[in-house]
Image (cartoon, rainbow, N blue to C red; front, side, top):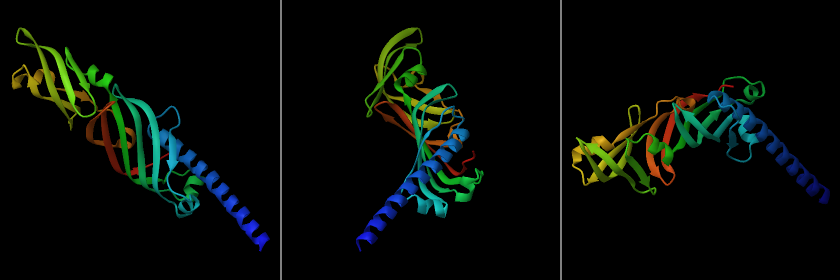
Length: 221
């Protein structure tokens, strides 16, 4: 009986070791594919969620694969903390082992942050943007006709054609018509990883965080 228990323990340890070695290999392969798909010079961090891994590998189906791309620049706009997840990834084990291209995800989501420095960079001259993750405020001086006027305004943010739009509202010390001198768009037309489309944006402590997604995405090496 004791020998049987010892044998079972050894078998479990071996299976766990094989599981971890296998997941490291597939994560490395997926990292290379994601790097190729996003034109990265380095290798992203990839994590396959779920334990045990071997059952996923044998079935060729991975419910969730997370990746971290770091900081990248798109159409002159730097994006920090660019990360995402691929869901319902179909990757037959034979295709992975033989480096075939027939690997795809049913859905991919990506998020990233535009920093305060980026927000200020695209603001109109004389406009300074500040925020604490709850409110986004514009302040400064703008020319209205031939007169320079000091102002403060709350800003709303939304996805717009050609980028991310910051719209002035509740303008203090200026007529509402002056919003056009304060409102602006951060151009965001670069090709994001996996051709994801921006679906939303929100104000956070570090800047503006956007969300994007795409469906039926190939992961080609």
